[in-house]
Length: 66
Image 1: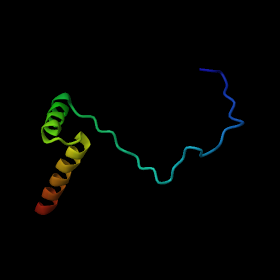
Image 2: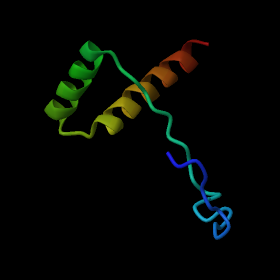
Image 3: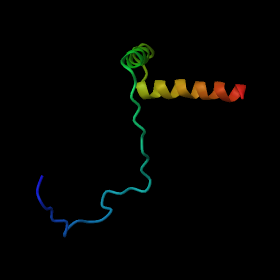
Image 4: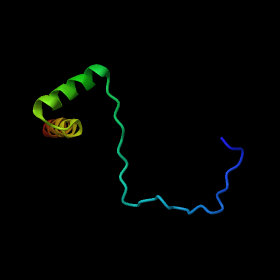
């Protein structure tokens, strides 16, 4: 790293996007990740799509018993 950096020509907010949505990283244990990836491959789905479907089903289940 340099001792000093020159920001005199920097532009504040150049990369800021108000509409940007932060995607929460999810870290799965290896056995869960392996299972989900295998299931997604079997169903021909993207892993993210499969996980969202599974979580939505759980949300509906939890809401139905409350």
